[in-house]
Image (cartoon, rainbow, N blue to C red; front, side, top):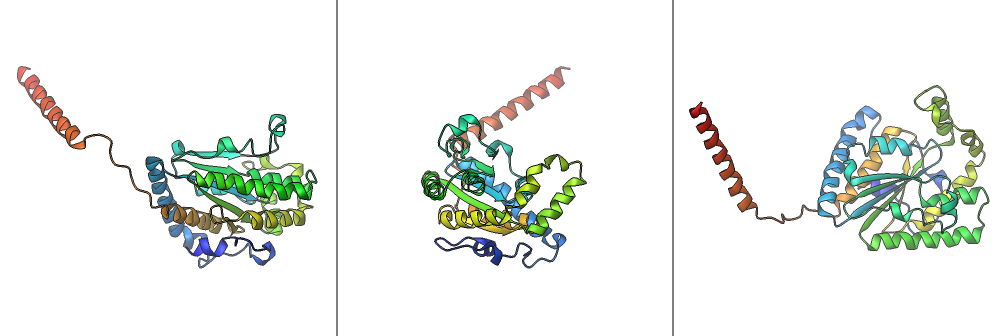
Length: 288
């Protein structure tokens, strides 16, 4: 509950990311100290996903947004690694295709929303259309303000049909971003991610901050809250996200459905089959 309350963006209030310390790490001083608590939440999340899949009354949508190198892939790899892929999906939303641009901006998103019993994770999301488009001057203020209302209506529709929505902004400092870019340069497992745009976009840092602040303030509501998670420390980011998701899913009060078959009859038939096989095996040995 600590993380859900602390990092939630209040509905109807202005938001200043400058007032939130991206280096915050709670009551733990190190990754080693936090390992046990993080593991507990990740195991709880795996068990809750099994319940979600079996009950098929709820769906869960996780939205991940951040500045470049903010840790979206890291959250997916570390927090959601324990869940069953059969009941989960990950979708990324990059530059729209010509076919997508021929429709409304939410057209490409809706097919990836989770069905009952599923968890869907959006690595970037429909919010790109009030962030990148705004910062690059592809839309004007009346358009992005209208899109806030369309996003709110879209998420209200999902919520009304049983989808629990959790939206995370992984908050890193400008200095931490630069350090992560430098780390990528020297790591063959990561330097394929580097593009010229990564460094060019840094020049628009303040514009992105303003766009994120307004979009979160305008769309954080009870059924689709935003959480600003301090993410300079990757281990704390994973702890906070896992705790918020697990506690929210636990609050759904899920339970396993009742069997649709006569268990007593099946048990009797099973025991009878075991006895019959034992008799046949004994007879076979005696015959031999």
